[in-house]
Length: 586
Image (cartoon, rainbow, N blue to C red):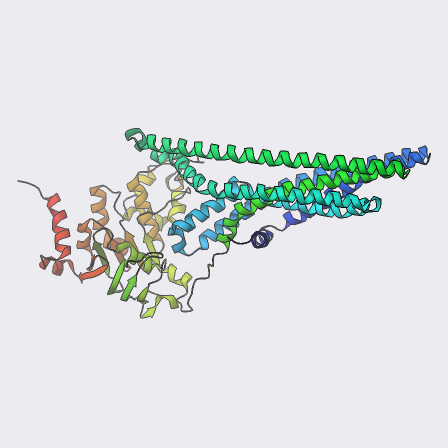
C-alpha cells in the first residue's frame, strides 16, 4: 500500500480536478474557525482589562462590539457549514462521475479480474458507504484550522510563561502515543473489515435481488444465503463492538490526560498570577488560550484518527484511478472490413498459465457467414473477444484487410463491429433508445419485423416508447427473455456495421422463433460478414463455413457438406448427436 501522504496528494489532485469550488468553501470554513478560536481567547480578557482600568463605559461599548463580532462570526460559521454541506454533495457526485468514467475507460481485462472487481467495490464502498470523502476533507479542514489557531495561541501563552508550552508539549507527545496505538488498531480493523463486508454485500444484494425470488421459493439456496448473511452480520457486529470498545478506552485515556494537563496549567497560571501580582485579565487570557490550545490539540488528534481511517478507505479509489487506461492505439483508419485472418494465434488470460487458444489460423472473407462450434471451453467466445479487441493476443497476429488490428484507430475499428454477446444487457430506456436512439421509424419497423418482435412491440400501449423497466417508470414493461434477446439482435442490426457477431443469439427463444431467425438470417445480415456461435448445430446449415474448435485448436474449417463426409470428425459427432433428438419415431 502507498504511503498516506502519497494517497492524500493523489486524492487531492483527483478531487480538485473533479470539483474545485469545494476547496474554496473549505478554505473559507478554515479561516472562520481560526478567527473564532483566536477571538474567543481574547474576548473575556479584553472585558476584564477594561473593568480593571475602571473605564466601565468603554467596557460596555467593548462588550457590545465583541458581541457584534461574535454574532457576525457565528453567522459566517453557519454559512460556511451550509456551503460545505451543499458542496460536499456536489463533490460526492463529481467523484462518482469520475469513478464511473474511469471504470468505463479501463481495459476490458481488468473488468474480468477478481482483484480489480474487488478493488472497484472497495472504492465504491469507501466513497459512498463509509463517507471517506467527507471524513477526509472534514478532518483535513479541522487539522489545518487547528494548526493555524495553535500558532496564534502559542504566541500568547509563551509571553506569559514558556514553561506552559513545555507542559502542553508533553501532553501532545503523550496524546500522539495514544493516537498511534489507536490508529494501529483502526487500520487492523479496517483490513479485517473489507473482505467480510465484501461478502456481506454480496449475500445482501443477492437476497434483495428480485430476479432470484423464484429460485429462493423453490430451492434451499435462499436459506443458505440467509444463513451466510446472518453469519457475516454477526461477525461484522462482533468486530465493530470490539473496535468501539478499544476506541472508548483510548478516548478515556486522552480525556484523563487532558484533565490532568489542565489542572497543572491552572495551578501554574494561578500561582504565577498571585506571586507576580499579575492582572486578572492576563490570567483569563492565558487560561483561555491554554484551553483553546488543548481543544485544538484534541481536534487534531480526533481528526487525525478520522484522517487515517479515511486514507484507508480512499486508498482503493486512488489505486483504481491510478490504473493506466492508455491502450496502444493505431493510426490507420478502417473504412470497410474485407478480410479477417488469424495467423498462428495463441492466447491465455491474464494471471493464468494454460492457453485457451493454441496456434489458431483461419481467414474470413467479406460477406461470408461463419459458424464457430465446439464443446464448452473450446475458445469460441475468446475468439470473439479478440476480434473485438477486448484482449490482445499472447502470440501470433490478427489482421483485418491484411493489416494487424492494433494498427487501426480503435474508435474507427469498433464502428465496423456489432455484437450480441451471451450476457448482453438492455437498459432502463425505451425500446427505441435501446435499439438506436436516432434510428428512423421506417428502419426501426423493418428491423423489428425481420427479427420477429414488431408485432409484440406494437401491442404495447406506448409501442416503441415503452420503457424496459418498472424500477422508476410506472408504465414500464417487463418482456420475456426471448423478446429481450430479439431486441438485442435488432440493436446489433441497427448499428450498420460491416461485421456482425452473434454469440448464442437464440438461447432464450422458443423453437418457432428460433426457426424464424434462422430462415431470415441471410436476409437480416445481407452483405455483412457474420460470425455465428451457437450450441444448436442446426444454425451451421445456414452458414458458408464452419470453424470447429477442439480444446483451443482448429480441427476443421470447411462447409457443412464437406464436414459431414468425415464421420470421425468432432463436427459430425456434435451434429448427429443433436439431430437424433429431433427425429420422429414412426
